[in-house]
Image (cartoon, rainbow, N blue to C red; front, top):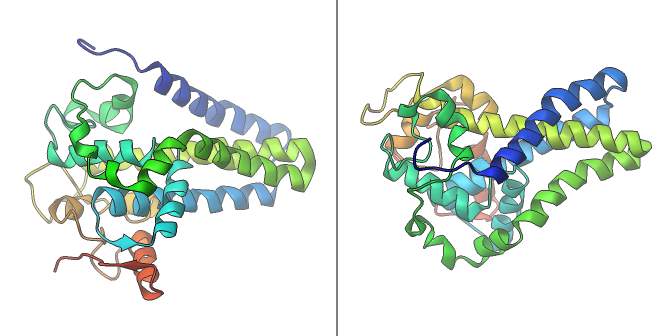
Length: 273
């Protein structure tokens, strides 16, 4: 790619996760199988890390669609860090630039460059349009900067947790199985479900809320991304804490935010009619 160089760290990380999920995960399942504990940890961590991205990184940091207490923000950012999608500071800076420059050259996951680029290809190359101005407000947030400084230990703790649970349940092989399924496999599936928002939800689907950019609504993507599939609505009303505005829209992220507000842990929920 002219003018760009390979991001070897990202290439190595994603090659490792993908190889572990495609080769290691089924191989262990074939020879040793997975326990109910392994599957339970997979489901629990998929939900926790997925909501860490959608509620913590996306709706709280990037769009400030609600406010919350410091310790709730800290927990959300730990959950988001476990998803292996960069620190909240860097993830949010890229996402704000995506909205500000959607479908243009500066858009980090510009869907005009095709499915592969918008899905994950953009991660494998250096970014000549990277601009720290999109992160300046977040750099003044002590919780965000704490998570940014300790991002690597947070990631490692998220991978160590399933191993420890599996080990306590069934020794070394139990630890390996739980690590592969609820650690590596879960990371692979959460990454790709999130990537679908940047790719599928900018290439295929309905545009009931406007055609000024390539964003599209895809209800079935919401099933695997905790409500993020109503992407055309989101691009039209970016600060709404709901991506699915109707009561029947499947949007667990808005339900979590609303539930937090009911017990005094979230406030200033923003919404548009």
